Image (cartoon, rainbow, N blue to C red; front, side):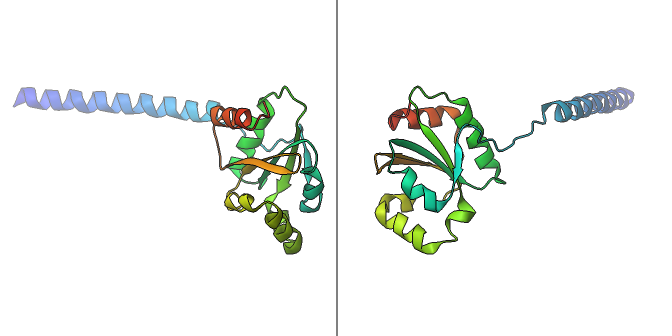
Length: 157
C-alpha cells in the first residue's frame, strides 16, 4: 500500500510539472506566432462594377472579388501578390458589396457571361478574362499551390 501511495504521488507531481511546462511554452508560442493578416492590393487597381465591363474587353484581366474585411480575401490578396507573372497581366479588385448595389449593371454582366453565376456566391473569387471572354474562376480561400495551378491553366503564368 505504501508503494501505491508513493507511485501515485510521483505521478501527480510529474503530471503537474509537465502541465506547467506545456502551458508556459504554449503561452510563448501564441505571442510569437501571431501574424497580422492584412488586405494588400498594391499590385493592382480597385474598380467598380461599372468599370468592370470595360476592363474585361482588354487583353488579360485577373479580377479578385471579395470583401476587404474577410480573412479569406486578405489571404488570397497576399497570395496573388506573392505570385510573379511573366506576362503583363492586369490585376483588379472588385468589392463584393459594391457589385450588388446596381442591379441593372450586375444583371447585364451576368447575362453577358452566364457561367460567372456559378462563382458569384463565393467570397473571395478570382475571375480570369481574355479578350472579352470568360476563361475561368477560382472560388474561396485557396492555397498557393492551387492558385498557381489555376493561373497556369488559364495561361496567366
